[in-house]
Image (cartoon, rainbow, N blue to C red; front, side):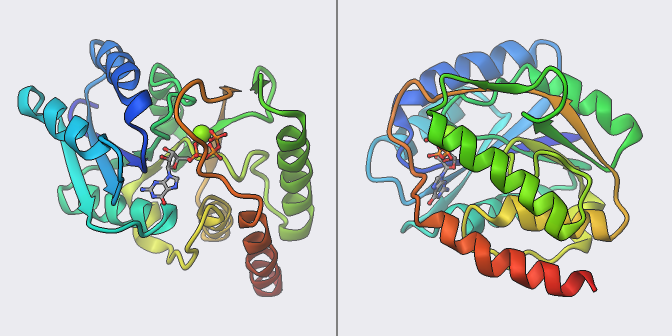
Length: 234
Ligand SMILES: Nc1nc2c(ncn2[C@@H]2O[C@H](COP(=O)(O)OP(=O)(O)OP(=O)(O)O)[C@@H](O)[C@H]2O)c(=O)[nH]1
Ligand SMILES: [Mg+2]
């Protein structure tokens, strides 16, 4: 699988997490070859400078720069297009706050031997959450259960932001979301096209550095999205 995987890492004001993330990425790269495509989304801290510094000695790092903040969904889509244009067969995404352990990429790539996408999942045996505030655990659990029932999907962790797709999956689904709902939208659309999604157990830890970009108001965006997807289910 050498040279096939590119991982998109959206980063908005994540300077405090990046050094530790780089160490973890380098450690995993000793066993698995992959490219990293950061998307610096108009960060106002030192994120961009840090990434440009890492790139000097590391040809396996690339960056897509947004002059202003365009949001998570747009950043992911731009990162995916960048990876696809470079011919990567496996295109992944990982958060920049080191809540998604890079070592798990090895298990996810393995799972792709028999699936079209691999999702790091909190809701299969061996998965879970550690130190995550109770209200977020509850919202995530309830949301995922509800989406599964209403939308008729099999994937138990449809909102996980740590995943890898075969390129053809991304090329055959159109993503309209402009916020965190993009994970759910991609999951539902991929399943409806008949693609198989493997879930790899994963324990999500709370972020240790930097500030959360998650806003309660983002949850409102899930309502019209779930309704649109539910109507199209028929
Ligand atoms: N490019 C880009 N990335 C973003 C934006 N908002 C969030 N992100 C990134 O998306 C990832 C997820 O954001 P987080 O703030 O960690 O959201 P979360 O994981 O739901 O919540 P916490 O981990 O508790 O903060 C991180 O890597 C962020 O840097 C954005 O507007 N643009
Ligand atoms: Mg996070």
